[in-house]
Amino acid sequence: MIYIKSPSEIQKMIEAGKILGECFDFIRPYIVPGVSTGYLDDLVEKFLRKHNCIPSFKMVDDYPASICASVNDMLIHGIPSYEVILKEGDILSIDMGNIYHGYNGDAARTFAVGKVSEEARRLIKCTRECFYAAMDKARVGNHLNDISKEISRVAASYGYSPVKEFGGHGIGKEMHEDPFIWNYDRKNGVQGVALRKGMCLAIEPMILAGSSEIYQLNDGWGIVSADGKLTCHYENTIYIDDDGPHITTIDEDVKGYLSNVER
Image 1 (cartoon, helix red, strand yellow):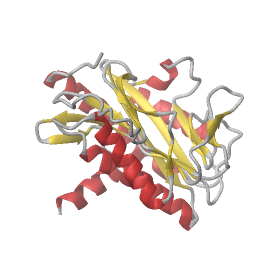
Image 2 (cartoon, one colour; image 1 turned 30 degrees about the vertical axis):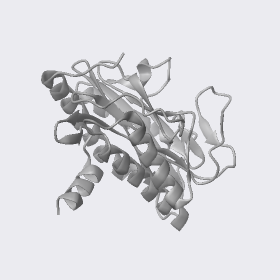
Image 3 (cartoon, helix red, strand yellow; image 1 turned 180 degrees about the vertical axis):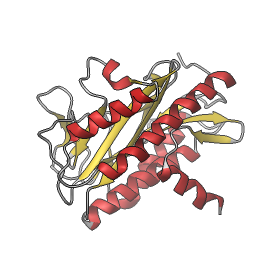
Image 4 (tube, helix red, strand yellow; image 1 turned 90 degrees about the vertical axis):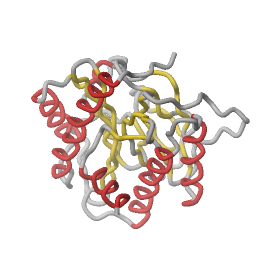
C-alpha cells in the first residue's frame, strides 16, 4: 500500500530531512585518513540525539549502529567499527536515517578520503548524476520505472553497473514503505505505479564499477562487489508536488547542485 502524504505530513518530512542534511555537513570534516568508522558512528548518533531525533537504523531488523559505513568494494550495510580505519585513497559510503516527530529521513553520500584515484572520482560523479537524473523523472504523470530507467541509462553511459537486488523505497512514518524502486530498467514492459502528488520516496542509486554481481558477508549485513571493484551509493529523500520533485535531506552537496541548476 502506498501512502500519500498530506501537506502537514510533508512538512514533518521536510523537518526530519533538514536535520539529516545538517548531520552530513557536520560529519564531513571528520572523514579523513586515520579515523575509524566506529568513531563516525558515535558522532552521528550524538548529533541526531542532540537534535531530538531517533537514529532509525537501530530500529531496522536489529541493526547494531546508527549508520552504515561501507568502504571501497562494500556497496551497502557496512557495520561501523573501531577496527575499520580509513586510509588515504579510500571511498566511504555513509547511509543514515532519522526519526523526527514520527517521520523519517533517509540519505546516503559517498565521500573521498583524502586524495583518491580518477576512477573513484568518476564513480562518485556517476552515482550522483544517477540520482539527479532519476529524481527529475519523479513527476506527476510519470511512472516508477521512469526513475529506474534513468539510473540504468546514466550508469551505462559511464560503463558501470547498477545493483539489481537492492533499490529505493517509499518513506514516511516507516523507514521502508511501498513502493520499491528498482535501480535498473527491468525492460519487461511494466511501467510501475503512476507517480502522484504527495508521494515521498527515497531514491538511492547503488553503482558498481565492475559487474553487478554481489555477495553478502558472514555478518549478515555487508554487501560487497563480487569482483572486488569499487562501489558507490548516493541517496536523498524527496516528495512529489505539482511542480515536480523536492529534496528534504538537503546538505551543502545538494545546495551546490540546486544552485547550479538555478543558474
